[in-house]
Length: 63
Image (tube, rainbow, N blue to C red; front, side):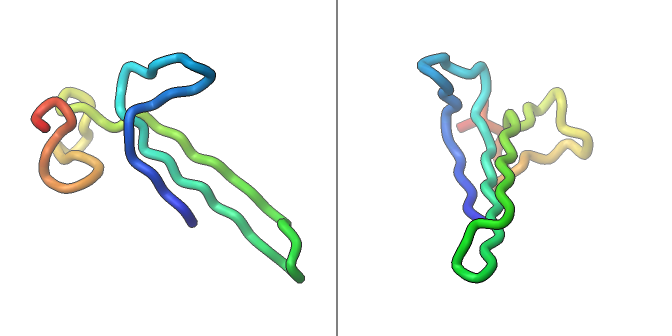
C-alpha cells in the first residue's frame, strides 16, 4: 500500500479540501493482479464523526 497526503489536484482542478490517498496493488508471479485507488477529502472539524482528524491531532484549518 502506498499513501499520500496533500492538496487535491486532478486535471488542473483544485479540490476544495486536502485529499487522503491510498493506492493498493497486488502482485502475483511478477504481474499486477489487482489495483485499487482510494481518494477521500480530509475530514473537517464539522464533519468528524468522533471529533478527531484523520491524521494527528490537528484539523487542516488549524494548521
